Image 1 (tube, rainbow, N blue to C red):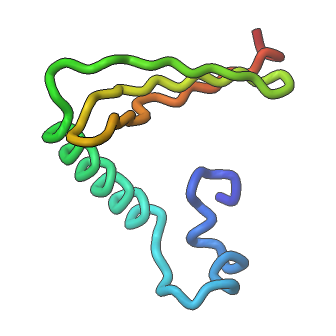
Image 2 (cartoon, rainbow, N blue to C red):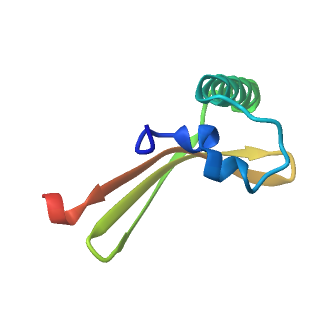
Length: 93
């Protein structure tokens, strides 16, 4: 179980270092999904029908990264929302 994603929240070792109430993996995933949906809704309501895509890529050692942003003008500012961070290992290609 220790190698599963997010299983750290159920670990006795992890709970030793916090005063927060215990949380299960299911509760953590559910809350993360709720936050994601709320943020997607807020961005979707604000983002106009026309926007610009901006790509940003970089590498570090044998790893290559790509991020895709949706950018649009807002009163007094230009906003860029991260849509999709991608990661690939050049060692596996």
